[in-house]
Length: 418
Image (tube, rainbow, N blue to C red):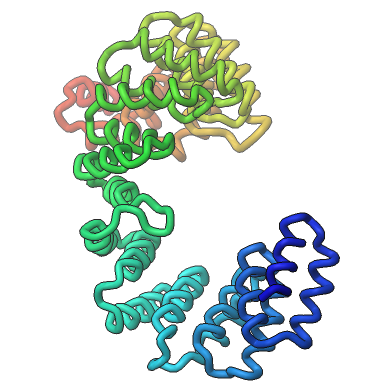
């Protein structure tokens, strides 16, 4: 083994050219033992092509050796030659000691290709051979989680957790928590996040715990964990919006707005922070700050429809009708007209006594909003004001069908029919 040790020493010293020269000597003239040991070492050091050549040479002497076939398949996978790996693995016989490992590799390969049923078959076959092997249960959990089969995934992870909490460097408690959370079982997920954090206080786990607590309605827990996360890593941008939401649910609006401002300092190009901050500013009665934040969001994304609609509603409330039309026109430059903005434009034109433009916008919006009573009410009153009694009667008849107990609408229909 002296030659193998020399090659490894050369690699570790960065003398790769000399190492490869000596490698070729073993490939061509070395013993099979040297080839095997060197192949495994080169695999670990990332010399995949060289390791592959050694394993292929060994298989010339041992064509049915399962361990070699598995090693060759693993190297092929790392080289991105998945089809070759599958062909190699399918050569293993069922009575070979390496057959279960081959099944696990095949399951992983088929899962990568989206062939979930085939992958499951391979794993279940491996489990029938090694019923107590925890790595197989973990692999099944991963497969079911990827498919969205959350109940099956939790059952598989539960079997793993009876024996191990960490598999291949993966925190299984966190996996269980994530699956429960994605499946909507938020409260059930929290104890698993706690266990995962007890094992390792990792920032992504901390965030997932806080997010799930928020979903479960445990706002104080979410706030506590998000603040802890902020102290560990203030540049974890996703925390600030959720922290603001948690504070808002606790009716701590000043703290909520402060969380948004802290988030903007860390992530000044996040339009969602500006938009949410604008809505919070409205809640605390600061319309000037709200407008500024909405405009910042729109500057970042001129096609941000929700922000534009919220801003135009504020401008309508302030009777700034020309500003409304300016926003609507700006949005129209980037995409097709948004029905809610058409409606706001119609109101603005109406208030500016630009009646033909108002009618045009109402008619355009009607195609999309004819199921919304608030819009129909606005449109109907406008038509009455414009003396379009027949069209107005049609609108208010629709409203009566939607709201049969609305006496005002019934009265309007009666008067229009006279």
